[in-house]
Image (cartoon, each protein chain N blue to C red):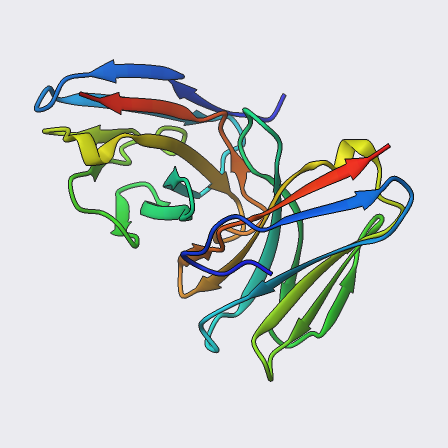
Length: 112
Length: 110
């Protein structure tokens, strides 16, 4: 089954404690992306990757890092989480430059 | 219709009626426009997209209309069903980046 898998689904952490949210896709897609979803603001793109070892900033990259060492994986790293990073995060992948994207189930992150 | 930064608009329709969801986009240089559906507790799901050089595209029970003159996009759902109840987002692609609207919540009344 074609899917994008994020882990964990729920995470509560404390300010400043580094964390990684993993994302994996099984469709051999070149394009992968991270979004955060906040009430009233829709989805905002954090980072995206056109292919292995190619990553670029999206609209709201501050406080986040990503890596793309393998085609299937695109982890999101928060080196020093802060409460304003409390949000619902989605990973997505696509074979067409981001079009017709498949989204993961989401990771709800709370930073206290 | 939806736009960046506003409260989530809502739309209620009777089962079997047609639904029209509107979206105002911001960048005239965007080359693709996309509609996604998001059900409660799930990630967005692709519905249909349209290239900027087109003004209409039809899918299964859905039609997207693009009016570049006024930067307006709409999604029409024919014979709306209870399973269509969800939040609908428009998105635009500019370069390799995507910009989403705030969404419209569609409720189908049985």
